[in-house]
Image (cartoon, rainbow, N blue to C red; front, side, top):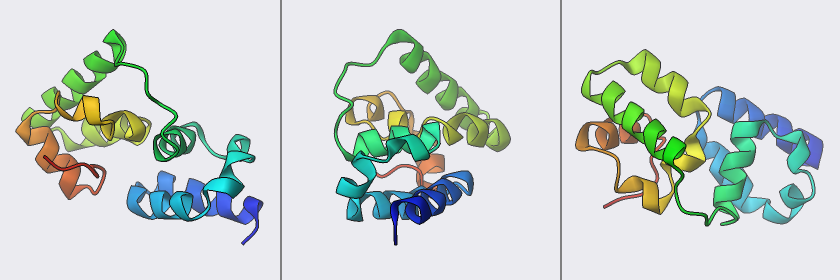
Length: 120
C-alpha cells in the first residue's frame, strides 16, 4: 500500500470513529507516515502524534476544560455530544496524563466506543 492509499484508509477510519484500526495502520507504517503527515486529517495527525510519542507537553487549561466537558457529557449520557467532542480529540483522550482526569462514566463510555486505549 502506498502512502496516498494509506492516508485515505486512515482518514476513512477516523471519520468512521474506528480509532483502533487507524492506530493499527499507523503503528505498522510509522516511517511511511512520518514524511506524509500532511495527507492526514487533523484528528488523524493528532493520533499519529500520540502513536509517535511526540506529544509530551503537560495538559493546558483548555485541554483540561475539554476533558471536564467530556466528563459532563458522559455523566448526563449525552452520547451525541460526546461523539462530536471525541471525534477531533482522540489523542488528547488517550494521553496518560489526561486519563486520570476522566470520571468512571466517561471511561466506561469511551471504552465501549473503542476510543479509550489506556487502562487503569
